[in-house]
Image (cartoon, rainbow, N blue to C red; front, side, top):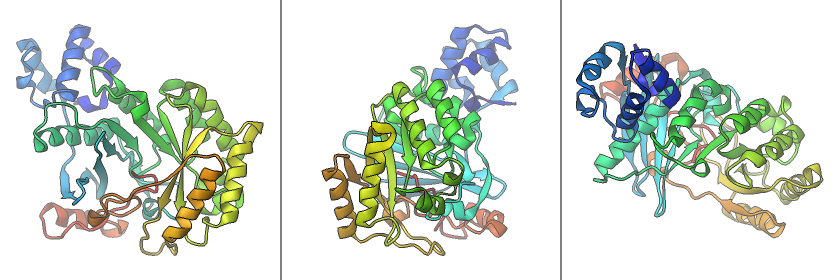
Length: 380
């Protein structure tokens, strides 16, 4: 049975044409699902009765079971979703005065294995489907409208910065992005949808051709030797290739700069010489430099990482050197740390892969309090 959350609008049109329906019926169905949050076909009153009775026989709208929801004192909300087979992913909503941002996962686990990333320490389980990616947005948006007693759109920005490397799940990511951008879906602008990557160069080029949205790159080091250690993918796609891909991406991008994420690790990548190397790298690459902004991320320690966060004065000095060197640099504000929803923190008691299924079962029946599940270093 077809899960309608797996379909972008073109696929929805093809699906309904297979049922003998015209394109405008697909648009109506698409709007009911994504704009109005309808799940029961009987509620879709402008669809013909015959179609409404036919749809339950051939398709469904599969949402994700919620294992837990936690609300932070700062308004951040974190969901832990069950994706089956002992796997869970998290989704985080971060409210601001002028926007509402949803941080979405693309994989259960991650194969990149960055040293400072708790998701990588868990290992990789599987890719999420398009429907599982979009279900996070669908469920969050329509829960928030009810929770906040609003009829207008609550989520204005989506960042693919949750669990996993989005560009290693490209076939599921692309139709999900199209639904986010579609005026009949969530109607988000390309500037307000961000894909974060640790540097999968060939897929960066494909994204530039297929669906160029805002790009964030997990950099974390100013030279290949250090980045090889922190971000193992660098051994396949070293900095020169990564920055060349950034320059190729920019002509198609909705913004005229790339955001570089840089996790501040005490004594590892936070010294003045690292700041100077980073300035030289980004200002001189290709003879023209890479138009960019830098986001410094305070590291949130997790067990067995062997790493600690840079002291605040060190972070401030690092940011000052970069700003004075001509690169706009900000320090990410920590949000939701009281519910383990801050950048890089864990979110559910399912860390150990050997007994994850048993722990998820205990979460389902309420016998254990949600404590930790892995998140990636690219989370908002």
